[in-house]
Image (cartoon, rainbow, N blue to C red):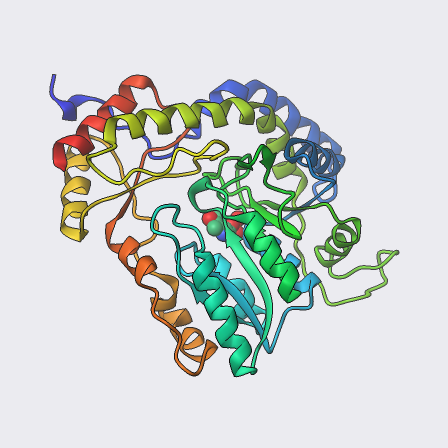
Length: 384
Ligand SMILES: *Cc1c(COP(=O)(O)O)cnc(C)c1O
């Protein structure tokens, strides 16, 4: 039997998981259909309690997406015109989009070549440049836990405390990850989650949540997600948005959450097997305890080597993807903001640019078999 006659492997797999909980899902969804409370049903509050319990934090607020979680968190701090929001250049577009939508200026920061997360030295350097110019107020740092690996939160927290800046954890790819035995949700002032279907905990549509230890922030976010409503439904206290998590998505997440602990362990087993098979052949990600392994990404020698590996994997029925092909400061939508953010001329972002040429993500989900993992390793190893 040749490699190509084997069934293709899934980059993400939501079918295997659904099969495990399909009967329960059908039952829970039927109850929502019968109850008819599609907005603010009791499932939303139940999920919020369980999310906070899982993360070990005080409060969870369900919202309509990961992007809206970031937006509601920044609106809560009054971030807008004249504010500088520091964020890694190597991340998903939503991280940079939100400050711009609010009229603030994203300041792109370079990333670490091993962890792919925000580089602390470069962050400090860019904060100093913004301070020296005196045009923008350094307002917030958005740390992203890229691919599920926590950013350097203790150091980011110290820096933000020193500067009076808002520390926002974009944990959209990392729900379930931990740092020093403490799950994300308790680092910084606020943690944003996405329940996009392929994330570590995903619903069947759009959804997200905000986590915090701070009761006042949680209360403010509940108002902001409901058009800024006050104590009564028809009192509008502030400008908000329609940013609620709907009952059906909350219900789906309630059925999936009990699987998450085991799924995180399965992701870790796969990542460790990949690392064992590929270390020394390509640059493998650090196998740090607490990594949520939302994605598994290797670094090839250069762009042609990556293209060769992608081709060989495709021929072997192994899908791959490039997260991300372009550093955000090079995206047409953000280039002008980047050029204007530090008018005196911002330093280059060499690591982010280099990673975009060489990064490659391999199949990663909790339902990969050992045989599939071996096939992925063999396909990559044969091509480098
Ligand atoms: C997925 C993602 C988001 C956005 O989440 P949505 O639920 O799709 O809005 C934000 N930041 C990062 C890093 C992400 O990966």
